[in-house]
Structure formats: C-alpha cells, structure tokens
Length: 349
Image 1 (spheres, helix red, strand yellow):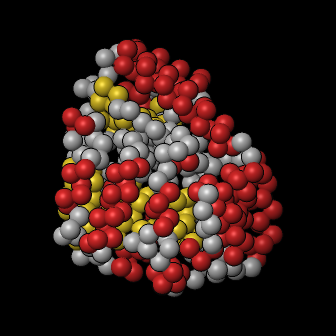
Image 2 (cartoon, rainbow, N blue to C red):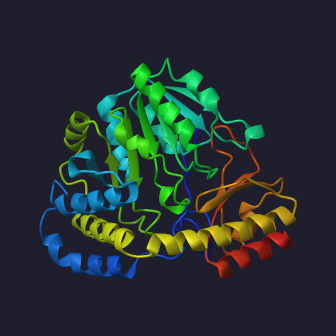
C-alpha cells in the first residue's frame, strides 16, 4: 500500500529551515494574528454553522479577483481545502476519476476512500510534466476530473485556453471538473482561467492555508455555480466543521488579500527568489522544472533529504508521487537568507 506523506512535518524532525512545506515566507498577516487572539473570547460559543461573515468576505475578495460577481451562495466553507475535497467525494461518489499525475496525493486517497476507480493521465517528462491537449481524449469515459492548478509538485499553471477546452469537454460529457487553486494567488496576475466560474460543471477549491501562512488554522472553501450542489455540500459532514478561530481568521485573511498589497508583495518576493534558487541549482547541473508557484521541483541523483536534515534543512522527497521516481525533490521558496543557506549546503553536497 502506498504511503501517503506530506511536507511540513515539524513534529517528527527538528528543523531550523523547513523547505518541505509551501507556506508564504512573509508569514501570517499581523492583523490575522490579532483577530485570532481576540477570537478566544468567542470560543465559549459554538461556531456559526453557516460561516456567514467568512462567506461575505470571501465573496468580496473573489469578486475583486475575478472581475465577476461571486455571490455567497456560490461558496461553501470547510475545515481546509482537504475537508472540501473529501466531502465532495462523499457527496458525489464518482465511480471513475481522471487524475493528471504527478499531482497532490490526497486526490488519489479521497477517491479510493469512496471506492472509486482511478484513471491516470501521465504528464510527460519531455513536456516538463505539463498538461497538454492529450487530456481531452481521456475525459469521455470518466465521471470526474481533478486538476491542481498550479500543480503540486511541478508548479506549472495549465494554459488558460487549454483549461477552457477542458471545461467545454467536461460539459459535453457531463463530467464534473474539480480545480484545486490553493496556490493560484502566488502565480502572476492573468494566469487564472476566469471562465471556470461560469460553468455548473466546475468546482473550484481554494484556501488561505498557503497564501496567508495559516496551515494550522484550516480554512478552505469551494466555489461553484451549481447551487443545488452547494446546498447539498453544506449539508454533508458535521455542522461545526469550521471553528470560531478559523472563521475569524479566514474573514480577516480575505480582507487583507482584498485591501492591501500583501499578494503583490508576496508575488514580487516569490518571483525574485524562485529565479535565484532555480539559477543556483542549475549552475550545479541540476534539472529544475519551471514553476509559477512558491516552490520548485528538481531532480538530483544524490540522496539529499538525510544529508540536508543533518544541517537543519527539511525538503520534500517526491518519489512517492505517482508518475515520479527516486531523485525528485520539491523545495519551498523562502526569504533570501534562508535560500542562500540552502544553496550553500547544496554546493557543499
């Protein structure tokens, strides 16, 4: 049985520099921390089962990002993006799901838990593991397609024109399309496919986990034009799935993303430091894959995890991703001093 593992396991190994989890290096916004501390007083009460303030703030943020009206009834909140994914699987129970791989392992696990069959679409190494139009030929005989955009661990964004063709093919075949956009806020402006919001076949999954550096809070949400699906999804799972602190922090995170330069500052930092890391690794003869996200996938024939861990640096071993093999690693883009430290140890290795 395949072992499911993730980055960010700070409990098993003490690390000074965690490059294994793709978290915004700017850290949690200060106003979110303040709201979290204030929310303790409200924890003597049950959470709002409808997450009303959180949904209002998300709707305003998404409307600003997309330039389209995103009303609250298109949004469902959950205990992180993974919660939305698993509840969607439990609700729709697809019998056969198309997964472009390599990609986030929780998709495979969620499908298997409801007894679904997986059809793999293997991204080609000669195409730098990017999705190409071959995927259109694989949609007709499935019930659902799950795509990660930007993809984890490769960091590439599927071309918007191709994504529109995928949406059209899913509509033609009456196939549900789930698009995980948890890393989209790190990508350059203009890479988002806004037509995803127009189709009742599409379910977009997003979260504040990565962009606002709050993975311990667990605030995720879905967006869909299918109002009947949204109503059923809200009734799936427990009533109090989004805690008081998660609702408060999520609402403030949405305000920060909407009303400040936090996303712009993040993108500027990531773009600069991602280029630095990729350039320095390539100087060492290492194959680095082009990324639009806050992480890089690379290949090295040397065993790196244990060696780097001895120096207090954790990276993500990607050999357990379907479609990859031993020698693939993923690193988060961090602040410059941390990235310099990583490069220094890689040069020594």
